[in-house]
Image 1 (tube, rainbow, N blue to C red):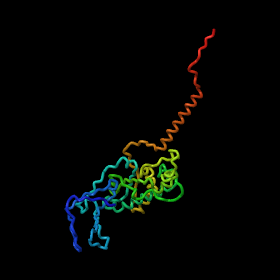
Image 2: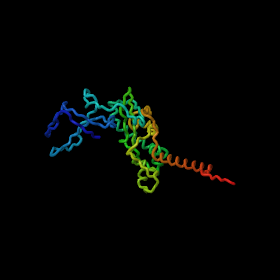
Image 3: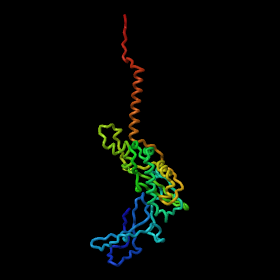
Length: 299
């Protein structure tokens, strides 16, 4: 993933003649902006040569990249990242801590992070394709129709929480989150999928015409934990490391219960019906008395 780089010092606007070179040196300083959610997983800064105008184009396309690892410049690295160190309340609610055995944050993690994210995505896809798990992976989409095996997430939907990974002895802890897109292929197989609801007639009841308003959602913490635990031993074959534990993060916020709109509609309708029934029973049991009685006087 390419990120913007702003040069704040130095001058590299020069012409490099064929067969010659230009030494950038150590006087060039730059600021690299990395989105917070990708900061833990970006480990290299790469420079790429782009020919312009009538510049000589080398047919060898394998020699125009130079990548240096983030880290202390005293160790010959490009510089240290300043990632946020505290997980957000949202991350703490949906993340799980995956502990990788004998993995170094500086040397081993950069080499396996791509395989790690792909493996987590594969495990989630396998778990969620079971009909019994579909409603937990795709809440609000009804039940799965058919037996097709499709993906709910890709490696790009797997993230690492702010402040992670962390090193503790020989172990590395990666707080992992999965955020499927709302229109992912698997959830669209649901009996109440967004794609199916979008073609319903406007005359349908409101309850059937409610649609999702977000582009993505977090996979529930319990679902992610179970999906990874079921295939915990497969990390060795797929990533080359042993996972010693998979535990939920401690939720930093309040566990407020937020009811979906469709459920609120049902509750309101039921309350109205109950009030109407009670009123009818009271009316039948205690008929209205005459409030203006006549008084007769006999001689």
